[in-house]
Amino acid sequence: MKNKSFIDTDGINIYIHSYIKSKLIGKLVVGGMILTFFTAYIWFVTTADFDGIGKAVIPLILIPCLVLFFGGRFLLWNIYGHEAIIVNSKSVSYSYDYGIIQTNLKTITYDKLGIEYVPTRNIEDEQFGRLSFINYRTEDNLPEVIHETGIEISTEFAHDIADNLRQVLYSEFTEDNDFIPFSEN
Image 1 (cartoon, rainbow, N blue to C red):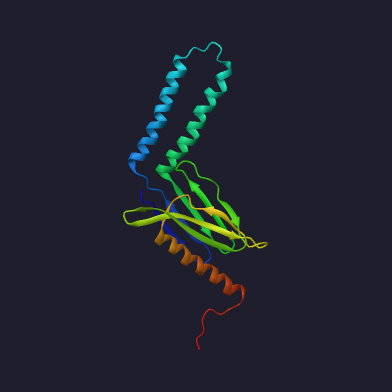
Image 2: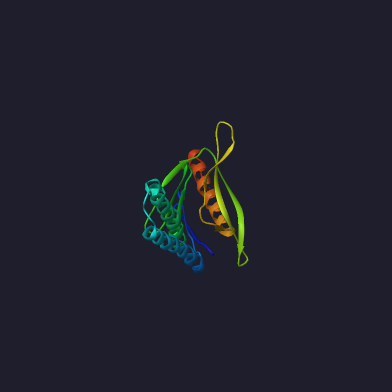
């Protein structure tokens, strides 16, 4: 599972796109588990004696719905998973794409932004991990995680994000303080 990530910037926003690349065997196992559950469920419902089953109606409806929701979502994420993150000098926004379902763009403003990269695994001599965006609150400077990447990214890509973030924040700082970024003298 070697995830793919891309970064782009327009000088004001940093656009981060990560795509999950899970192995075929994992997709087949999850799909097989869901299919096996529903096959067993249909067999149970068609062969069960329904005398006095009134108390079991809610679990008979609720359990397959939960398996379909969580299992189906997990399967779609492993097939089509895409995370989009937009970072600028005022906020962090993110959304997830499951192929047929896309979440709304959620935006979180921050006071002072920091990032933390935590390595989780090595794949083919390349280190992957999760990147956390941290807000340092104005009132007490305590850190709080405002977003953590849902897809593991490479260490090299995390450094690219940090470099682009420094450029965007530096650009905002020079504009706010009327600094001239270069001089001909």
